[in-house]
Image 1 (cartoon, rainbow, N blue to C red):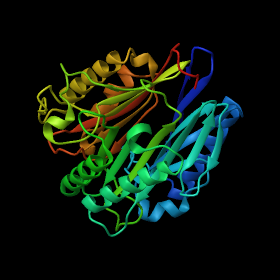
Image 2 (image 1 turned 90 degrees about the vertical axis):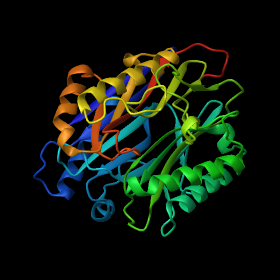
Image 3 (image 1 turned 180 degrees about the vertical axis):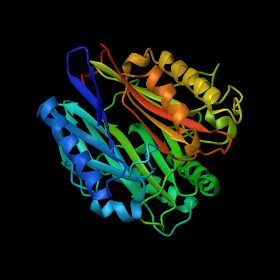
Image 4 (image 1 turned 120 degrees about the vertical axis):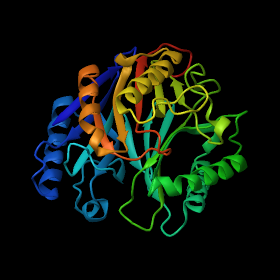
Length: 365
């Protein structure tokens, strides 16, 4: 099954977010993956050849056994993470398409997406087998900055979004925090400069020796004032107040559109405390309030959201959460996966991306 949503800029240029899921959970993985590829191919025929996939993420139930069996979908950055879809199938996919762009592979495994004045750099599955979570996170971030500097960019000036997938997050997330804090301090990312929109969540690489893997998205060609940090302090406190270095959300303005990347967001209050402990339904509603506040702070609304990824700690909560999302957001592609949040009291977390038409002095996308 394919859900997709088309978003248009002020010039009519389009982007599409799609979530492809499997309906028959009884099929072996190879058949489920083949079904996803057929859906993907059909979608590409439907939306036309001008729409290019720029980033793909696979959500798998058993990455160690399944990653090598994945079909090739397109020549773009691919992320593969073990986060089982909670409809009890073996795989699902999120794909981001952008109209009229050129996509090229870079030497370090990343991909560059080019159009106009910008190069968008996507990287998926950056990991360090055998290192603990502190050392792996530090090394991944430092090497990402080094790669960006080869094209006259940097983590500080150009990185818009990161995703950290952490094996045994209850144990290893503290190392992600310390490794990131150390790397950011050395690279100039501080509370007085900026952090990066991010999700830090439970998830495994196919290589079981890897404690952490990171996906990233950067943009070369941004001008001063084009990228902004977005907060909603009456709903959520700044993360540095409890020792964590990421932005609640980041927006990027172009001459024809605004992108908004909302980090992993949970049921949290303006003091950094868990709201509604033990009640997934009420935590979901509070999480939505927080996301809505971040959307509003960037001049956006739910109608601008292209996709949603929902992370649940307990699979027993799936039906309650699925019913809530299907009722309240029937027109937004979403997927619900098993992925413990970084603090055990948070039963649910979500992230999303939005795009709204915009007219500004910056070059068009």
